[in-house]
Image 1 (tube, rainbow, N blue to C red):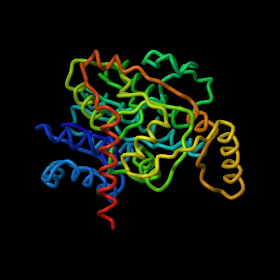
Image 2 (image 1 turned 60 degrees about the vertical axis):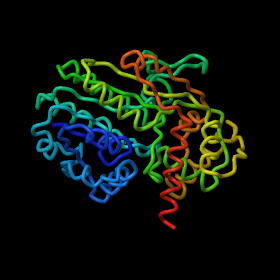
Image 3 (image 1 turned 135 degrees about the vertical axis):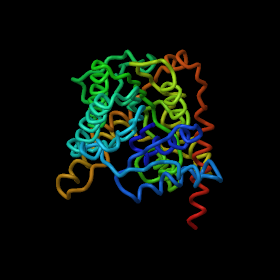
Length: 341
C-alpha cells in the first residue's frame, strides 16, 4: 500500500488523483477535515467520475509531528510519498517551520526504516538547492548549499529536511528527493503558492521585480515522482523545472491568460529594501504578520536559472511548457470565480 502525506495540498492532491489511475491501494493523511474539500475540488477538475475515485482513498487523520498516531498510519505501507510541509517565509515562523519540515520529516524517515518501507519519495524545493552568483550559470543538483549565506527560513528548514532523508538512505532506506521550482497548478487560490499569484494578478497586482525562477506544472511533478518510484533509481535528487522565467514574463503571461491589464510596473531593488524595513517596523510596533522579509526581497530581485538535464536523462521526460500550464491554471481560476458569482 502507498502512503501520501500532505494529501490536502497542491502536490499531494494531484498526486493522489494520478495514483488512483493505477490499481494501487492508497492511504493518505490529513490534519483538518475541512481541508479534504480542497482535494475533492482538485479531483473535480479532471474527471466526471471524481467521486468514485476519491472514495478509493483511505484517509486517516494524523499529524507528521505526532509519532504515536503515525505508527498506526504506517501499518502495511510499502511506499511513501512525503508531500507534507509548512510553507512560510516569515522569520518569526521559524520554530514551526523547523518542527514540521525537519522534525516531521525525521519522523517519517524513522518510521519508514522501522516498518521496512521499500522506497520513500520526498518532495523538497529549489529553495534547498545552492545558488550561483551569475544568472547565466545554470544551477544544478551539484551546486553547493552555503550555510553561511543569508538564507530564508523556509529554505533552511527544507534543506534540513533533506539531510534527514539522506540520513535515512545511509541507514538502508531507498530514497528519492525531488526539488520542484514554482509549481503551477489549480485549486489553491489563497494558500500562498502559485495559485494565490493568479488571484492577486486578477485583482490588480500590476508590478514585477527584476528576478526570475524556474516553473513546473503540478501534473508533471506528480508524473515524475511516480516514474521515479516505479524505477530502479534510488538515493538520487532531481531538480524539476520545465522552464526558467523572469518574474516579469510570468506576470505578463498570467495577466494575458486571465484577461486583465498587462501594463506592469517595475519595483526596483532599492524600493524593496525600503518596503521590507517598513514591513519589519509594522510587525514590531503593531504585531502585523510579515509580508516581506529581507531574504524574500533578495529572492525577488535575483534571477536564478535551473538545469533540468539530470531528470531528462534519467527518464527521458518531456515537460509541459510554462505557457500551457499558465493558460490551464488561469482557465480553472476563471471557472471557479464564475461558479462563486
